Image (cartoon, rainbow, N blue to C red; front, side, top):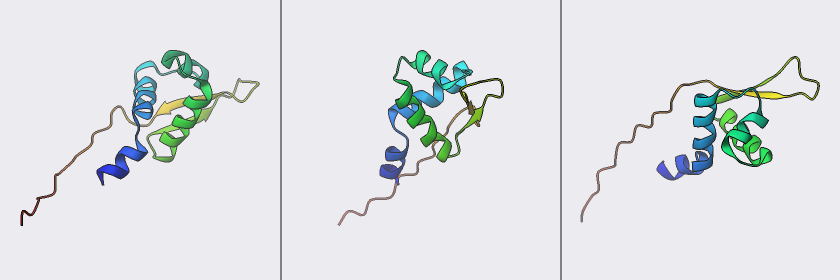
Length: 89
């Protein structure tokens, strides 16, 4: 339903997805800088997008701190919405 979709994909998560696609950041920290947001909030939104299958978090091999690189699995998101016919009684 439309309500379920809006609960899963918030404005903040759309912004995170768009920034990953557009900027291809090398780490979550870079992504947070691009978005001018707190890294913990960016991590939370990115993990939610990962659970939805829209992005993946990849561990960077040369990192000492276990740096995560966000990668978009799609170039865009398309929603198809078909309104229900209303019965007027």
